[in-house]
Structures are given as C-alpha cells and as structure tokens.
Image (tube, rainbow, N blue to C red):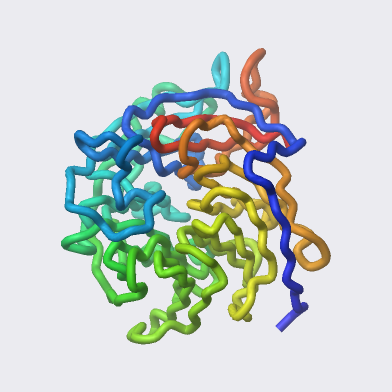
Length: 403
C-alpha cells in the first residue's frame, strides 16, 4: 500500500499576498459574466484558449444573484433565460504576449468546459456543459500552430460535432473526460447536474455521436462536480451541495457509492485527479479548504489547506505532479506546492489577486514562451503562463508566475 501519510493542516489568511510574485499581462472584458477558462492540451494547438460565460437575461446580478450560479447553494429558482457565449483566443507573441480573439459563438449559459486529453478524429475535442441540460462536443479544426503563423491561425474554427440532453429540467454543472492517462478514440465523459445526478456517456470514434451509458442519483441536491480517477477511469468521484464527497464504480449499477466522506463542512464543488501521481486526489469546497487525499484510503484526508474563499476549481499542473492551482472565489487564485506532503506542510507559493469579483475559471497554459519568441515587452522567458476569469466584473486576465 506504500508509505502512510499523516494529516497535515495549514492556513492562508484571507487577502494574503505571497512573496513569490505574479505579473499581469492582459485584461479583457468578456461582456457576459465569465466562469470557465480552458487551455487546449493538444500539441500544435496549445496556443488556443477558450472562455465560457453565463448571463441571466434582464437580471441585476449585484443585488440579486441567480440561485443556480456557483456562489449560491440553495435550490434552483424559477427558470430564467440564461445566455452564454463561447469565446476562443489565440496566444500571440508578436510585439507583446497577448490573447487575440478568433471566434465567438452564442450558446446557452456555459457552466463548465473541458478539453479531451487526446485528439478526437484527428482534432482537439472540447466538451461543454450548458444551462439547457446539454452536453455538447466541439472540434477545433484547422492547421496547427507554427511560430506565429497567421495564415494557419485564420483557418481555425470550433464547430459543434454532437449534442445530447443530459437532464430535461436542470443544468449540467460539470464534466470530465476519462483520458487523463489512458488515450482513447472512444472516450467516456461523466457529467453532474442540478438534479443531483451523474451521467456516464460514450463518445463515438468519429466524435459525431454521444451515447448515454448510465445515469444515477448521486446527491440529494446539486451535484456540483464530477471527476474521473485518471489511473482507473472506471472510478468516478462526485461532490454535492449536500456536503458529501462520494466515489462510484461505473462497472456496477451505481446504486451505492464505494465511499461517502463528510470531511468538508460545506458543498463540495471541485475535484481533480493527478495524472502524474497515482492515488493523489484534490478536492475543494465552499468551506474554503483544499483537501488532499490518498485514494487508497478515503476515510481521512492526508492534508488540509485553508485558502480562504470557496474553492470553485482545482487544476493539477500538466507536467509537475506537485503543483496545484486553485480558484478561490472571494480570495483570488493560488498556486500550491505539495512536494513535501509526506514530511511537511503543503505551501502556497504564489497568489494572483488582481480580479475584482468572484474568482471562478483558471488554467495553466500548456505552451511555454521560448527565447526565440521573446520581444522587448511581454512575458518572461520560460515562466508559466496562466489565464483566469471572474464573474460579476466579466474579466478575463492573462498572467505569469515569476517562479
């Protein structure tokens, strides 16, 4: 079973700025409230980033936020028109490192997006969870990136390949792909929804069809988040507004979870499996804590980090198994180093506090700026690039970690 981990706890006070600096590169107005940011992981397309938005029509957000947006934990209110927009950007390095929009598509409000970790039918595939209860799969078509090739970029477009209705009266709140470690031409997608259900889907080899394999009631209220165990993708995790973290074996009818944890004191809203470290899982909650787990023993977390602000998204680094990115709603964005998990405290090594509203979407850019791409102004050579977005101020920001 390997080395046993002791439980570790540390705290980051609300509003704390860490000594390790971050540097803002660009601020964009998304017009609609922004809640999701995803960089493409596929080689040749890693300069592409998408941002998803959510807007209630004719609603005063500041005085009366919608009940089904992430900062509320009550039941869904009377249905309203929920507008969304898919924004697509290239990362450019001429003159200055910046994002340039190449496509916008009006959709139902977007609650979550994830790229498949491998190509689908030769192209990068993007899954979108929306407020009309649908899961859709999109293909990024066009030429691969080649050293600021403007002609190649101009041919790119994201087009919808297929769509399936997951829930008739509700919202699809999150999704995940089974491909974190195991590539597949027919990957599985799991979704969670506002009716407390999880749904397991299979994508066709051509990515033009989606088949619902199974669906089950997982939580008493909203099932805010779902995630695969990337090392064993028949295992799925879920978190709900009932404050429970659960595990499921999809080889069974899923009438009973493999475990139920009440380690979080409030709704569980973020889960991510580490694709570079087996048995390592991170979860986050409205209770402002990030818990780290050894999946061989889900009775007790191995570490507890209080980051301040509800932990809406968690993203392990795509190369470094010890770096974890957290979007902390009321307390900005933080980068955690868990390399000393077995003999010391996880450490918050950087914070980005430039957003003026709820911190929701965040992701690591998979592309590193090389010396050949550097100009007089812009990002620092070799430093990690990140993008983040916030809700009520509809802000999308590009920044770097001066690690």
